[in-house]
Image 1 (cartoon, rainbow, N blue to C red):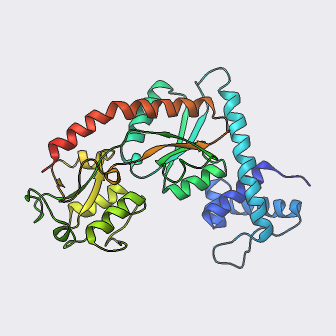
Image 2 (tube, helix red, strand yellow):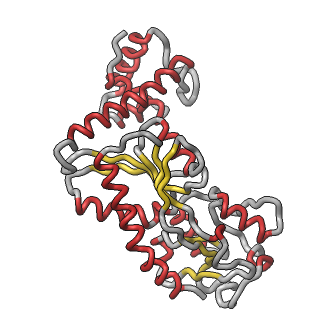
Image 3 (spheres, rainbow, N blue to C red):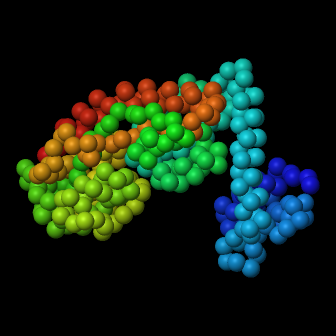
Length: 316
């Protein structure tokens, strides 16, 4: 059985886009040429790999097996090419990693800016997503590492984690909000208004539940994109949350105000981020990945005091 790496890439594109037309555009082929490539792969394997009768072109059982191997083979080929290009230095090659929405709103873009200044010929591909999705891509070797909340991985021997500096997160509202001028706000006052927050990090969810005196908490508006959520807060009476990673808050030009919440103390672990760098234990990182991690750690140290000072001056 002959397996063509290019055909495997086409199958992965079809699975990602769930459309022959969109996948063909993504890989820069005509639809007819793309369809022939998938058919040729199916002929080589001896099975239909895609259920063409389903609306989302779901993979067949055999197709799922081929997809699982395709991810590893395509990723392995990319890493091989990457390491060969990087053999004589870090002037070329590609680094692929992911990050959560919070570090993706400030820390990671700053680190990438410093990285490409240092390595202008290198290519950087990064994806902002929740930690579950990032972990799936790590396990299929699409990413070499990701930057996100490390709580789920610190005790797992299958992973290696490197903690970044903790940052405090805050409740905030728009300037002109009824709560904006109060010296402190009770939980009861807070929950008189809609909350536009992400509750995926377990520490945030616990604080929300405790303040609302409920066993669990569901926000009025939920999204993983912090920039989008803070835009909702700026244009409504909704309450949001923000951490020191967020350039969106720092660049809000006074349109957002931090709230002091009664019953919450500076020392509470739940009020601080627990972000870090997560990679697979025992897996060798490429030179560019190691360099990117080094720059992220350096940037994390550099911006800590700067962000803390800016947030302190914006607090009520």
